[in-house]
Structures are given as C-alpha cells and as structure tokens.
Image (cartoon, rainbow, N blue to C red; front, side):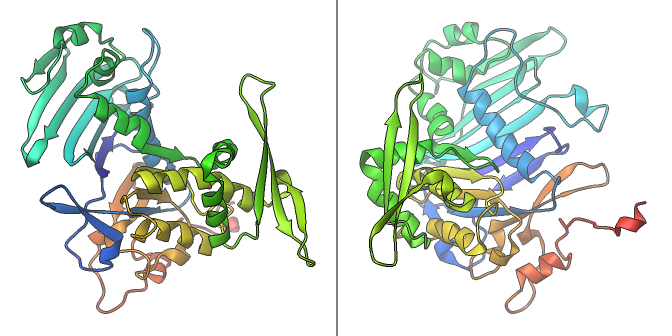
Length: 398
C-alpha cells in the first residue's frame, strides 16, 4: 500500500513535490478509503486522479515513481548510467542529483525509503522501519564531497553481513538492492514491494499477451465477466499459442453472437482499439484487485468512453470488487468523472507549470470547498484550480 511519494529535480519537476494517499479528516465518501495497521492509526485512499494540461508534467510524475522502482529492481553493471534526467531549465539543478522517497506498508509495517542520485552515481540513501508505529533507522549512506567517499551508518535493527553488503555496493547501485542480491531476509519484502506490488501502464496501454496467458490458465471466466460488465458483447475468447519463436506469441479470436443466436468468430485485430486496450487491462486490473497492489496508469481516458473510465475507477472504490484494498493512481483529461459522486476532494490532484516552466503538483484539498455541493468539473474548467492550458487565438501568435 502506497502512503506517500516525495521527489525533486527530475525531468520537468524542479522543487520538492509531495504526493500522498493519506485520507484527510473529511467525511465525504468513506467507501473510497480504508483503515490500515493493527490499531488503524490512519486511513489511505483507494484511488487518486491527476489532471492538468498537455506537457504540464502529469506523465513525468508517474515516470518519477517508475524511475525509482527501476533503479531499485534493475541494478546496473559497473559504469552504466542510471535512467535519471534532472530539471534542465536551471543551470544549478542540471548538476544536482535527483531525489526520491517513498513511504509504504507491507504486512502492517510502515517503511520509509529514499535516495538521491545522478546518472553517474548514488549519493545518499536512507531507510526507516516503523514496527508498531515506532521509528527505527536501519541504515544511512551519505556522500562526502570532500573525501569523495560515502559515510555509512547501520543500526542493530538490520541483521546480516552488513560489511559484505557495503563492500559489494557499486557507486551506481543501491545498498538495498545489493543486500537483497546477497539474501537479506529483512529487506527482501521491501524489494518485492517495488518489484511485485507497484505496477505501471503507459499511455500506449499494454500488450494483450498477459491477458491472453491469463485466459489460457484459469482466468478466462474472470476476463469474460470483466468484459461483459463493461458492456462488451463478447461471448467467448479463443486463444492459440505459437511457440516457434524465443518468446511465445498469441493468436486471439473473440466470439460474438449473430442475430440468429449463432457464434461468429472475429480476429482480435479487427476489434476496436478501445476493445483491444480494455482487454489488455483485464489481467493487470483483476490481478491487482485480488492481490491488493498499486496500479499507476498514464492517460486512462485514451480510447475509453467516460463511462468505462468511471467503471474502472469504481472497481477500486467498491469493497466487493476490491476486498484487498488495491490502489489506483492515474492521469487523465476526462473531466466527466470529476464529481463528488465519484471522488473525495483529497483524491483529486492537479499538475501545472510555474513561471520557471517547472512542474508543480498540488491537491484539490488545498482549495477551500464551497458551501453545499460543489461542481468540481465546472470549477476546474472555469480555471478555479488552475492546471488549464492557456490557449490563444492562432492569429495572436502569428
């Protein structure tokens, strides 16, 4: 479960940004949140939507979280560069490291982990655990520019051959990842949160292969129910696996019913782009709902009718379809779902650019609510919350 994500100096973001899934004290739509930890100290949100104009940094926000995951889960060989690009429209930030920190929960224990890095090296790295709500600093790594070396601190809470792990940690690698490679049992669940629990879908969508494999196992019935619930008139799915190449490929056919009640076979490539995209979403969404994972989707509205977007969001809000409290974080331009019938105010975020052309991320809850029911869509489109494109007449820019 994701609690909070903080980052700075990455792509279009210059200043420190803080994104939280912690529920505010507002009593609106309680079904959209869930209590966590044994003593239920606080509650988390089941979804969050990020709005903003094109080229404002919405995708870069998700790329920041994805970059953090990638650096944790895909250690590089010596000399290889990390996939990090700092904010380039300021001469100072170009030479400074990017920074990432995330708070999350695994088996009722909260963890806080972060690091700063450039493309060439890791600078700082830190890790806290909060068993029973009490903070424990397990390790810290700080770059000393004067000596050109790292200063390390370890506590008794972290067990294992720490000296070996330290000596094995390359300048472009994280201590966390290195320790897990050398079988740290304590840090493995943390690593697995990044590798297994945190999942991403880009604006281009997904390959249909994962859902095809899912259907060839025991997931076909669930996929058909998923498609029918969204009003796709697909009666059956037939899949053939081709193993002639290194990676198997899948030939997918959908079965529809004609006016006389007879089955008609369609090649999957002849289905609409929206149908193909929705089918590709079936496996990750059904999997994430059953496992209580975190799904991040860029531009959820692309190729989808607004009612389909609402359908997907409400799968996460409904306790019946989301018994494990999975979380959905997505960017979108679809304002038809921007309503208090679907979202709490603290679930809505905006991304915009300031005078330095740097992206900034802020929640709707920063704005005082109007009395009575507020028309969020109208308020956003009228410019009350910012994060709108400043469109000029074509002739004004000539």
